[in-house]
Length: 110
Length: 118
Image (cartoon, rainbow over all chains, first blue to last red; front, top):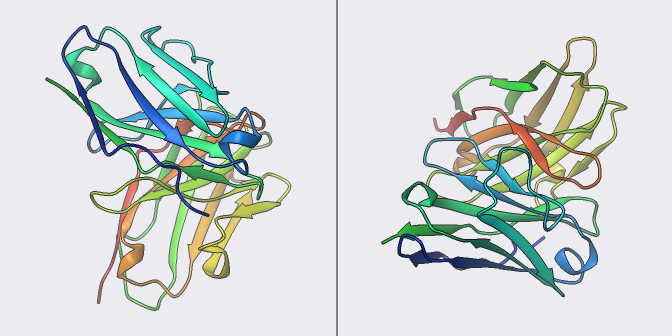
């Protein structure tokens, strides 16, 4: 199974909004509402930010939001903060009953 | 609060079998799915596979021929065995809970670095 496609890097200034895209196929993102997003700081385990495309777990800032259109999903971070500098990964359920991750996006706060 | 902890050798020789165990505490293994994810040094996350408490499994097709994931409900733990390893299998291996529909990883272990080297 091929990894979902994410931009290698995205940057923004404090207070700005940025969007990370995640492109798949009709066999994964396009076929299910099972897209989730994770934040990973260096040397740490990933942390769940968004599940089921748009839902936020308790405790996750409302500055993080998710969406989906066709075979692509997006994560938007609004009001960018220094602590948002991290790696971000999307994942989707697939028609093979497995999961597939995106290649990851490094977010830099300028 | 569910907690997961990986354990196993940090060094495995090429062609041998990589074995890891994940102990689950603070929650029952008799629900949802239990999964493994790995991350080679400096690279992204890769889905390995998951197991249900019933014993049913789903594996990444690229690893399926070398992979076994099993659950031991009496010990509230699950395991990973990857045979015939090469240097490309060097990675941090994470265990995680995978929620049953809508399939997301909500609790993670801290990760265990396994190096494949002679």
